[in-house]
Length: 536
Image (cartoon, rainbow, N blue to C red; front, top):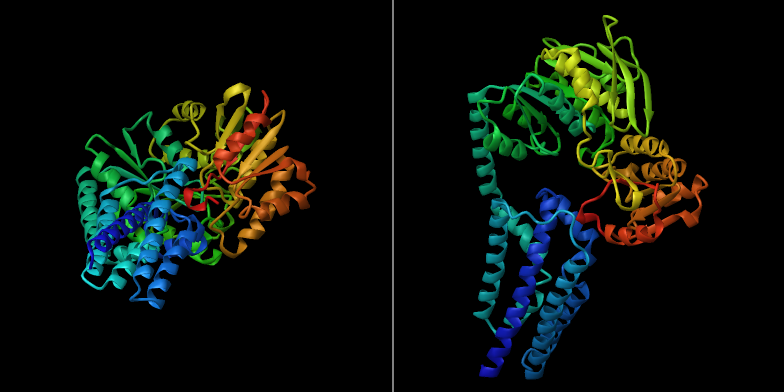
């Protein structure tokens, strides 16, 4: 091989390798957002071919280069053409990737955890090994690998995920064993909280009400998987903590059995049974069965507190060896606690808590949303079971704060009121949010990408969401023109003016629209801010 040909091959391979590595980093970010679930990641790849780090048209150039080599394998000009195409793929692809990242800043960036580093190292090793192996072969093989390397990045990452799984499983098992030992050593009272929705808000409320009497640790934000819980136990739990409040999500292999074997509960709460994450469970019947199964598990605790207004939970009458307590925001007299005189407005909630012994306690909170009465009553039931006085509970309710991104009211610039309800909306939550939005005076602007993870009923639920939004908002900004078609359909079918429906492809575009749209006194609600995997 001539020296100039060798230089050309080295340059070709280097640019292709650089682009392949850049793609691996981008794809690792998407895999992390999909919680390292291979099936969901492959689905994302198939649905978002146009979202790869470089324009897929560049991959066509690579395939054309391979075709040139196959048709004219011994031709010097064909090798030059193939090399030129490959370098074009690499250089233009890298420039495209940089431009894409600059124009579309991510909401949640790639977190280089030890697992992410191990996976990236494996994928990069496979990529470099393929490149080196190709160099030991003929020029055609070298060029073919260089041309196709960037396009093969998704497959390389999936293969790396498969290779690394045995190691990751052993690491997870070690973390779980160590967390169990730590929890057993300190022996706090464990309060577990699960449900289709309302888990995080109820967790925050329980922690706040108990802090008047106990030293409390809770899992932060939405840490509700085994590894998240392990991280909190191993990194934060200490002998000073008397109560450990843990959020539990049945959305991983092993489900509640695995989570409860890690953190068996002294008492637990089930907030609701609904359509949330229908894609993961497959059917509403499975969700119902899973939530009922949680109540029956010995490790869910001798005391289980149920939302008395949930029709599925109402079907659970008795469980051998357990005390079932119920709280009702709808005023059911059959429950241990119920609310009466609920008044909701733009300034918060007022209501009375009435016990089964006809004791009555007046309460007020600045929290928004009638559904928060349910969450508060569940938290109050825990507080009473753990001996917190009624006066401390009333003071605690008065000082409750909304968890981040859950009907969190704040002052925006220019006299605009912002309601941040961006976290993971579901049909029931969307309906409640629209009730809140409708309570505000002046012009009301809704920003939403619609509802997701609802399987076959997703389009139907988004049409319903659009109809609800039509009654609450004056202007609706739909984020993602493709995925919000059903929401638009619902808006228009409810008689909402088409001129008041705006579309944007990202939150950055939303910001640009609102700069010229908003006026002092307006209220803007952000409902369900989807992760970067949903960007169009």
